[in-house]
Each structure stands twice: as C-alpha cells, then as structure tokens.
Image 1 (cartoon, rainbow, N blue to C red):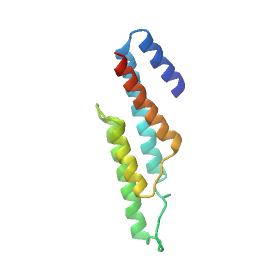
Image 2: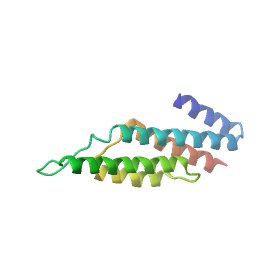
Image 3: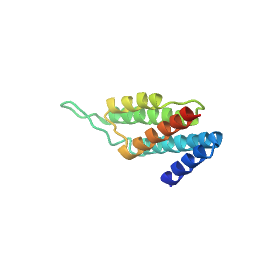
Image 4: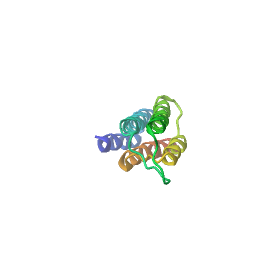
Length: 124
C-alpha cells in the first residue's frame, strides 16, 4: 500500500497538485512514525543489555518504561505539524543507547516518508 501511495504522491507532483501531494506526504510520515512507535511499545521488553550483570526485575521494568517513553515521543512527532527526520533520528539514537533497535524496514519507511516530502517541497 505504501508503494501505491508514494506513486500517487509522485503523480500529484507531476500534475502540479503539490498541495495535495504534501498532504499525502504528511499522511505517509504520520503512518510510518506511528508504526515505529507501536512496534517500540509492543517490543519494549526485548533489548540488548551490556555488562557482566543482568537487570533485576525493577531495573528491567524501569528500562522498559524508558523505551516506552521514547515511543510516546515518536507519537508526539507523528502528531506535530512540523516534525523532521532529524528529530526522529535523535529519538532513534536514544533507543539505541538503551539497547533497543526498531525494525529496520519500519525505520526505512520513516526515512522514505520524510525524504519524499522534502522532494515534493523542493520541486515547488
């Protein structure tokens, strides 16, 4: 479906309907960001831990809460009018520091959604 929407966005740009293409780009961004946020919440208990000792139950629960908190920040980006990919990258870096790595395909969808919008904005 994403591919079809990206094609439609390109066709709208080609037809001179840049406003509609921009609206569609925003929908793609919101959808991609929300998918990463949901994945992060759902998978928050699966993270990489470094060091010789494991977290105790409380530390593990706190770590999961921190990961879920970053998922909430991604949701806020999805709702924001002027979010940017660099804002998403900052959150993504924080997730990596916590040993959590969202699905690569989902992260790629976010990048495509933002870079596609920039392409639309730069052409008009």
